[in-house]
Length: 416
Image (cartoon, rainbow, N blue to C red; front, side):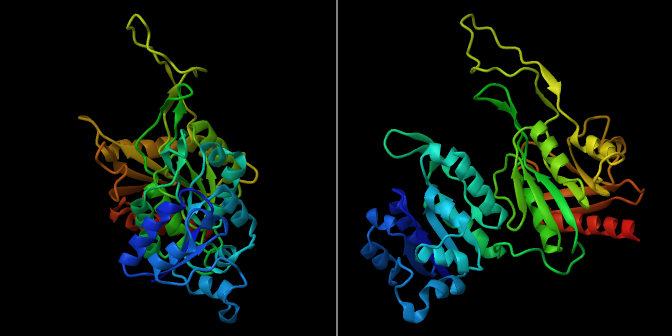
């Protein structure tokens, strides 16, 4: 396996030497491509000694080998770690002032960017916009850790541990994820546009706390990837997730149920299908405390009053009668149920399907150690047209393929 390890000018560059060691010890050929600024932190000799390969930074070095194009074309994986705010901006703009910029423009393999910077830089709207742009083009961005930074600073922006980066790199190698060049020209969803929601919503209680749930976003990502593989254009609306959005999808990030509601109503009109895989909060605090809620001196406990959140699935179904452009003809809901002594999970699911009015409901039983955050699941797909339920189980990728197969069938029948 041929890997290009790009290193940009951040203090975290010294930790990339540990990442390089993991790559070479796994038997991979690694070409290190530092920027000029990166060499202020770790010198060229160190990279050459650890990689056993020549190290170059400039476009016009090794011109006889067409190095600025060859490295990107021949790579099986490109990792940029650390990726500074400046390098993210240049990559989003498509600039190539040095050898690493050329590699990023010519690579057709998976690309993993690992940001590391001060918290203010990571949260700056310009950086947020650049990350969103890069993710929408199919590049994988590994969110930084939250912890100690340079000096006395602490917060989100810390360079992840080398083992975490290497695990994500290996996942990309296995999945074969590549930057998007558009959906496949063939497949059951070719020419279709599908909106997929994923992850959990968070309802703010005060500036520090929120009400949330255990959703990881894995199932929604898997559904989006299966839809992309089937030829669809995918608009992906991401809540709080522990995994990266799918490569090749148009990505929009939200936090609260109201933000998700607004995003769905912005993205869904004029599309073919909506898959509501997000774990949406049913309730939110009735009031938001502008300051952090403190412990009372008398030992009394605060009382938090809840109110209902918007019912996104029901609202979208209702809007089909009046929306212009129209809402999708196929709407798929998810029912994460627990059941009780009187009612089974499937009975709760059937009642929800009738109440919501969508075409298909994916029902599963959830719990603290079931489904949420796991890599496997078991679901039952219920249909509004009265067809017999269809079960699917296995990895979330396998279940996602089954869901997309049923979705494709529904769209095909409606087109007849």
